[in-house]
Image 1 (spheres, rainbow, N blue to C red):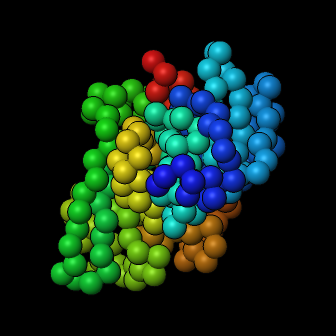
Image 2: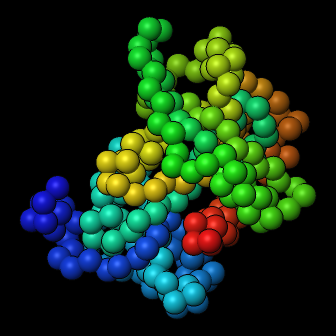
Length: 248
């Protein structure tokens, strides 16, 4: 992507240097403005972005990034913000845990919808020891009521048939979480030449049939809603702890 094309796409002509960035699915501007003193929203770019100075270092929070826009968002971070590291905060369906649990991705595989389609694996650029330390940082935010694990992620197509047989097969292959975006995030980071770290929380547990909307277990719904709301509220704090981790 040359500078002329970048300027056309992103509406920015001069980079603002930020060593690291947080990339999020949802727009949480007010949460980050409350959490980080001196944080300020920027205007004129494609993605709602917050810039803040923490420990004399600029951090960018790039928000509202859907799976199809991850490549653009990561190249925006690398080319126009000068980022060398990116942390992705997203959601998924847990095959092993509960609603509200967090997973630090050790790797992500792109799973085709056809039975014999190719599967490619994109491994995060961190050691196993690094990822375990990152998980401990997240656990410190969650406390005793939440759980975090380092796990393998299966990224499926936007239109995916989550039959029980298919879910059981994915779990049998060692996958812990199903998402729409983790593989795309790692692939975009590799393309842009920056280090990526993904942490995603479970909005549902498809093997157990537990969903906030449409769960088969009506009696469990209040518990599921509490867990989901608690995880949602903690996402900005988790992301900032992971940013601190990447600085160490």
